[in-house]
Image 1 (cartoon, rainbow, N blue to C red):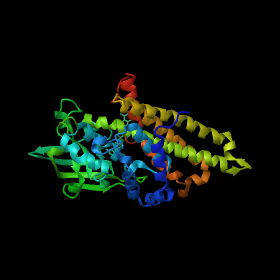
Image 2: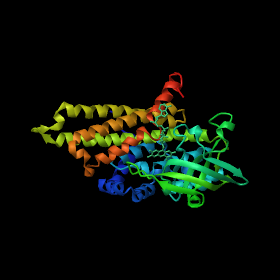
Image 3: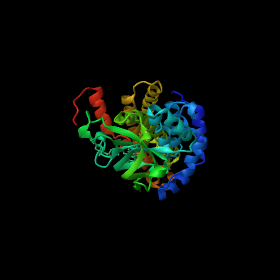
Length: 384
Ligand SMILES: Cc1cc2nc3c(=O)[nH]c(=O)nc-3n(C[C@H](O)[C@H](O)[C@H](O)COP(=O)(O)OP(=O)(O)OC[C@H]3O[C@@H](n4cnc5c(N)ncnc54)[C@H](O)[C@@H]3O)c2cc1C
């Protein structure tokens, strides 16, 4: 078996997570509250700035190290969803921002003084068809006036800045559907109550997700990232990192479930023997392990390509799909292995079961990944 990468980071993350046991997460889950203390502890330990180059105050370690951090968080029964975007959303500024934007924001993001963990793309009517977004930023002198609506924007209430995708040219007036979109950095501290309204959405998991309403929100033109009209390309760039990191969370979830299933199958005695002696119980857990191990290799491969600066869109998508399906299969087995106890809150399995289900839908749903592979890799005709 291959040794996991970054053993020191993994060990340190495990130690940190031991201070945040199941009771901590259960209490938050019940009230749907944000894990402020957990996020603060991770920030202070420097784990959220591993992707920020050293010159801006981060540790510049790359995506492979970041996957180790998130995998261990999830394997420990914790959840990185409250803050994983603090790791990668800054990538849009790092890759496409001006020297002034980088100097102003990146050191503060690295130290945690500024939280940039809201990423505003999805809209209620456009769905996955991002070129159909209609939130519009009209240029007026040295500012943009933003109007429109976004949905499922996570952590918006816990972010100082948001990377926002808007249209600056209507789709019908752009040369191509993907043209005419731009990225704005929105200062949430000034925006809320001055043209931006945030409405939380209660969901089946504790994810701090929200709906956003823009009503003549003014954003300084100096907050445009890169060139006007090229925003879609900038966002796609960042999505590869997001998909690989979320895949690593799925690997961590899957390991959590397999650890729990195999331990319980060994200790639970029914009909005078350990339930794990029955192959009907043992084989599904072994199958989960096989599937998860393969998915973990796919995540490592995608992260290595990303870190080498090579194209990795297909690999990032495939890793996310394999990992989210493997973690979901392991979650289902874990409930079945635990019988009735799988449903009891105090075992944390039902919570993790709900949490890991998300990743077959967000940040990109499985069908869209299959469509990418079917059309872009295998050259079959596109249905839409
Ligand atoms: C908890 C949560 C947090 C989120 N956080 C964020 C966030 O921070 N920022 C953000 O911008 N977005 C966020 N999202 C949005 C998420 O990325 C989308 O929900 C996801 O991409 C799916 O888009 P949709 O919900 O619009 O589904 P739709 O596009 O409406 O699709 C619905 C279903 O139809 C399928 N489908 C659609 N078109 C086709 C087709 N042509 N062929 C086959 N199948 C198709 C899809 O695969 C999907 O299963 C979040 C979502 C959730 C639930």
